[in-house]
Structure formats: C-alpha cells, structure tokens
Image 1 (cartoon, rainbow, N blue to C red):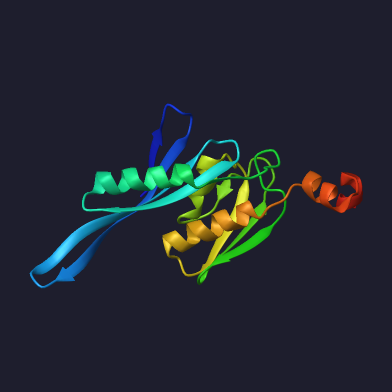
Image 2: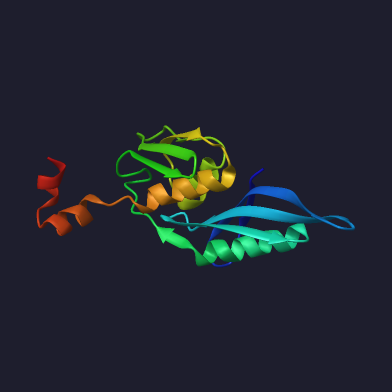
Length: 166
C-alpha cells in the first residue's frame, strides 16, 4: 500500500503501511493507528519515519515529520549502487546489488519504495528472513548508509581510485 505524494520542498513521500493497533483496557479496547513512511529527494537522500496516533492522518503526518528528520545521504553510481551489500535489522536480512541500465528496480515488499524515493533506477534486491516492513526498511537504509564510494575509500587509505578498484 504505497502512496505517492510530492511536497513543495522537492521531497518525494511514500506511505508504506498503515496498521491498526489496539490497547486493551478495563473498559474494552482503545484503537490507534501506526504509519510507516519513507521520504527522499531522488538524488541519494532517504529517510524513514514511524508514527503512531489515534487517527490515520495524524499518524501519517507524524511519520512524515520523523522521516524528514532522519534522512541519510547515499553516494550512488549513475542510478544504481556502488557494489553489492547485505544488511540486517533484527531477523530481517536484505541483499542489494547494482544492476545494469534498463534493469529497473527489482525489489519486493517494503524495499521498493525506499529505492524509488531515493533515486535508484536499477537495482536487484532480495529480502530474506522476517518480512516485517519496519525491519525491512531499517535494514535497507542501514545497508545503504554503510555504502562508501571508491573516492572515500581511496582517501582513507591514501591511495588512488585506480589502485583501489584494481
């Protein structure tokens, strides 16, 4: 259940999931809602947010605000990733690898909206283990945030990019 929305600040917003939750009290059940969203600028910045409220619009608004506050920057390589990466969060494991032009976004579940708002056009990705959307999104963003460009690695090692890439 992904929902598109563009804002005036140039960020793309996507709603990944809305969930109804219940708190059981003496008088019965109190219902609330949670929302998971991702926000990106289409040029390598992405963030996710998880909001909870008594009404759906309020939960979505809280999630969007948290997503804007928790953005990370990823160095892309022409619309794809720099190199294959595996990441975990809880029991969710995600594997992502770069793809050639024309491949598209081959990713399922909660991973696809993350790549779409981030500006990745070609990627192969697989979600393993738990399919919990929150943990899949966290694992995806953790893996993307850990990516380093060849220029960064070369600078840290005091070598040239050609020496690093072999």
